Amino acid sequence: MVDMIDTWLFAAFCLALLTVGALIRVFRSAKRDDRYLAAMVAVMTGAAVGLTVSIGMGTILILDITIILALLCFAGIIAKAKFTGGAGA
Image 1 (tube, one colour):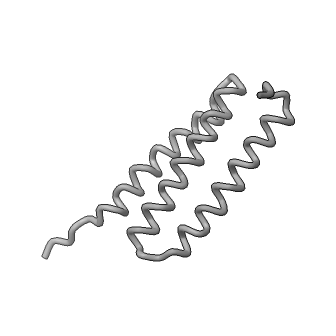
Image 2: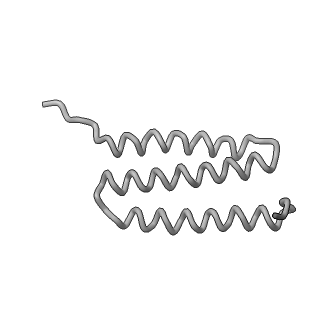
């Protein structure tokens, strides 16, 4: 019997590949603004991975952890941009 691939976990895998691509951009970019933008994209796609894994596995705990980590990462990125000479709004 052939087992089918779970659609949510496959989507999580594809999003995880996008997250890895964004993380590569964070470390290989020459400009600071590009690194900050890539870090934001990595956090957003990482949160989407957490959401899809949570749906695929049917557990809310993963979603709670994902929300907390995403908020902490966003706050950290914004604080780093503000205190390392980022342009103020």
